[in-house]
Length: 470
Image 1 (cartoon, rainbow, N blue to C red):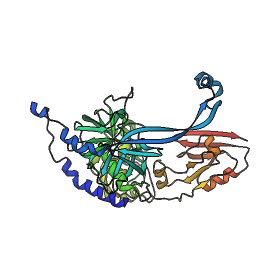
Image 2 (cartoon, one colour):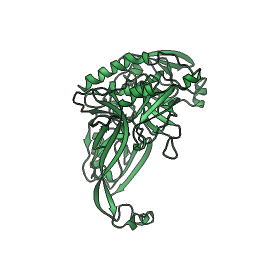
Image 3 (tube, rainbow, N blue to C red):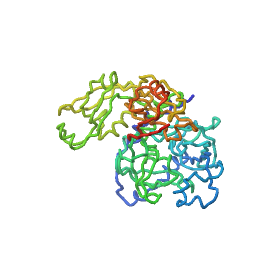
Image 4 (cartoon, helix red, strand yellow):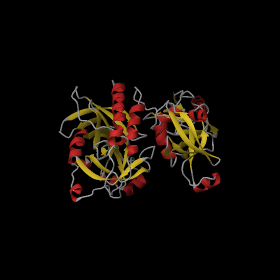
């Protein structure tokens, strides 16, 4: 049922794309035009935007005395050194979501529902529905929810092509800021392909000056035809409120998520089989390139689509299907929102010459096999579940598809490794100066009765070390 719903939705969205931007843009030419209202658009769009209420349980330890909660005493006793019995508390939060299928499918921001035990969607007419998490995708900061509507159709927003948007276009942001109830704000698109570090793995956003505040996350950014062009995700703020710089995940990423979600809820995005390096003025000058734009190919995977297309190390990818590529983040976004097994044309520069290469993107392969193992024993990595990295596994863990080695895929809550701070996504590089190449090798090394362990691991591109003596 899930696959049928998504397929039908995508077909409808693709069919309606040209209609959304068929009219020519015009600036107001009279006072009467300036006084025109957004009300007709809002009346159609607002019912499809919902409030998302979430609850989660967390365990906290209260200090034996309020005195020990003082930062001065924490210097000597530590935060948990003189704490009382653990107790459970319920933490509630709120956000927004958008109904994209009348059968009850909602798209929202992943950070709105992350870690939640209970999710409720409240419609603009005050109806409430329990929501079930279908897909959580931290890489794009998107999530899909399913409401049990018992066959009752709900109002839905059509998804339009965000690639057709231009800087200066009027947009509306609809959501539930500060929990005051549904609100609508207006503005323009301030920038496209804008960076907002740390929000998603793609760092590719629509920027708008329409007021977006806490609680707007997951809400709709719509164009003047009432089509969904983005999911409001983040703001730049020094005060916590709107400062006119808001970021929305483009609707093309929403369509890609629907298209690439598997029956088990995992997301498999298209794979080119190459790693890249950003162009700098020095690199551009050395390659005889006029300006530092594009992505320099640093590595080509054997047997991957890039190799089959004839793309080589040292090529500079400057366009994809006719769209200019400004940097690595834009290339990753374009690749991961493309379709697999369809011809994709890459414009490249090689030795100062412009040429085109045709590639057929594919789902990332699982080679080598993941060989997942849970480490046991009296050693610092006990309780970790580790896995061999392949392009598919790397993407599942939110890492670059070309990452190689052995990574942590999970950790026991009460395991020894958790106490030392190791966590999901860490890449184990070396144990006692021995490079780690497989889970089997790592398990064998940790079973050796060493006098101590010097462990190097990679986290978010930064190498870290752990030294433990018996």
